[in-house]
Image (cartoon, rainbow, N blue to C red; front, side, top):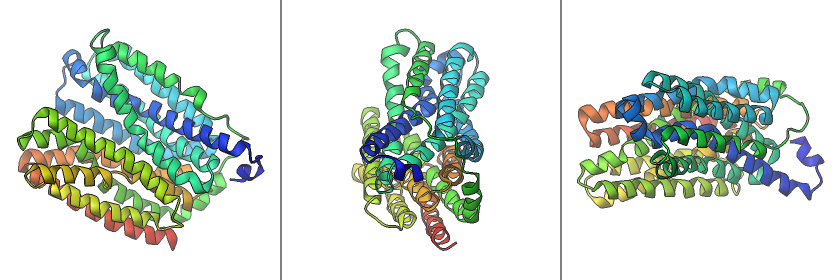
Length: 392
């Protein structure tokens, strides 16, 4: 915060762009392994002999370990600074990708190596949060966090592009090698760390609001669990309703595009509000829950409306949440967001498992209703957390 005031004004825009670009590159590089496994699952399953359920378990393990690593990663960022931790996360991600290419000769080995890469995800996310908090002016942080979160689907695009360009020609292992090289290319984008200041004092001051952050984190768990069901089940659910696989896939593409635009838009709007950001998330979740409820109804109109509302508002809030928490805890942004980010990762772990079981036993309409109820409870908890954060 202080170095922003000490820098010459002409350098500030350049540093803002550098910090934002570095945060985006770090985020993409550190989350690439899990999306690449998803994108290459068909080719990998033939060699390593796992089913779609096995893929789901591997992804759940990944997000479960990300949740466990989140708070320790936040402490490391506060101790050593975002640049050091960002580089460590990128190197760990690249190393994990190379290890999968060379050593994943069985399904258990793949799960273990993917679990190792989960630590890189936590390191990269929290280092990026701290970098944006330190180097981006307060009046632009909302947009910066929104763009950073919107960049995560870019990993999905990269994984999808790897299928025809590399996996179907040279083989899926070479796709992981290419991804490792791409991850290492993010290293020069990480800004040089200024000074050796740590934020131990700030981290301890952030402890006063720990319970408020835990409430927001619990809300994030329920919201992420419900929202993750969109990407996981909407295609299969649509096909079950009679939609062709091609149109079902386009429905998911539509939802992803809406999500990207909504995350950026929510960040842009956040910079034009003085406060009430967590309460705004609660409102977004209420509308998102309505979208999930529409998916329980038959017909193409409820499907499209449900996907747009569910993705557009029910899954557009992570960047806004990080921005809100950082704004309230500028002295220890990584430590504070590590608590709420734990909730997001926990939802990514538990949501597909729990809601998948509901769909298997009770059908998709019931599952979407349960997901909508989960998002409504999350909205209530967000409101509670908002009051605790602003009136500790």
